[in-house]
Length: 176
Image (cartoon, rainbow, N blue to C red; front, side):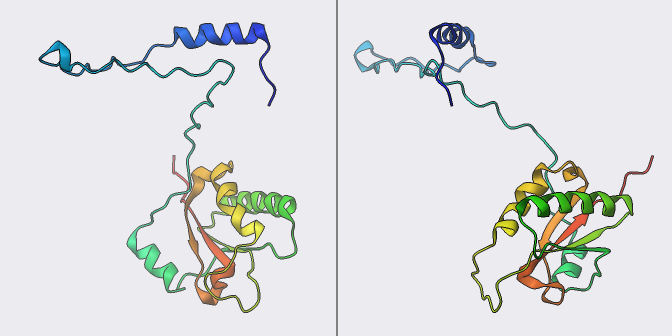
């Protein structure tokens, strides 16, 4: 990150001074005696040259909840995936690209459940250190252009890969 030059620092200081709260602060009741009044605390100021990052954009995030029947079916391994994506042998870049393409294809086909196989170390018991692809999946899905179409992400049942796989539950398309 580069430092601001003197012109930019002056401009930023003017911006910081011009900022006012959206809602006025509610003043605390005045103390009964002047001797008991606490010393005023200075209002924290943002240091010049250090702009705060804007708040994150509100994007649809893959949902954390499903109705109880879906969760029961998934936890018992009673649902057959409509599509399967196996990421064995891929690096981060190719896995991310393949996930995006396969999500687009599954959504286009009207699939409801995508089985995403990331793999696990052979003979791994809990707790197991996640691989780099498995660790990145949550961020990829949350930032995906398809995030609004993802209803939930769940660990797969052992018959579908257990710790080495995830279910991605897709929302039904909205009818016009």
